[in-house]
Image (cartoon, rainbow, N blue to C red; front, side, top):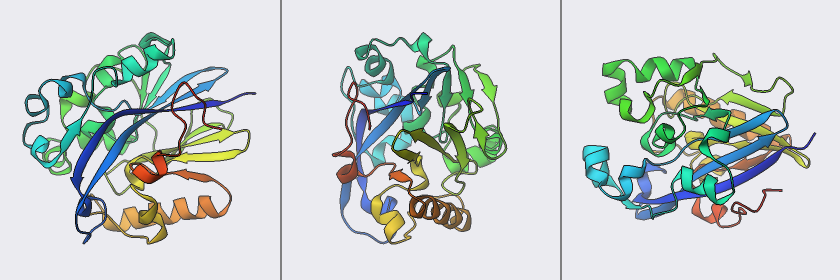
Length: 253
């Protein structure tokens, strides 16, 4: 059984470094990653990136959030365009797995209306609680598109064979999840925002932006244990790490 993984850059965000490493000084420019997994039983997209409207009017789309970022999101880098460049239509995606429902991870969900959306139940519930959603930074425009929902509580094996598995990594948001992908050379963990940077894991250093610090520490410890057992960690927004990741249509080996 052959599993193929492809990485796609769907924009860049520049922000204060302390948002990702509490207490750090300066600014950082980070990629907005999305991933495509091809499995014999279907195609899975992990995160959908920014909404297309951000290319033309970020403040209209994001409101006050936009003032915290310098956004680089050029034509042809949205998720639909990235897939199209590979000869894949949005209708060819079977599952959309959202690590969480922030604007740079679920903003492109509306471009993929026909797939099943996989999100942790506690993330979905939090996003639909007006008070909690406002506190965590969820916006219905990113995720409320009438998808056929799959709402796991904890680990979820998408194809039932252990090759593509959602693993809960709560803390950044109430129901954040990462994705374990079994490639021929071993497991890869797509961390989303459970682990922004390599330094996050190496220093066990939390970001300024998070929902629950204790849960995030536990999630980082889980990721570290997976790494110690041989899994490769794909850090969520690390520009130095990302520079070495092959970009679609090249395959991640």
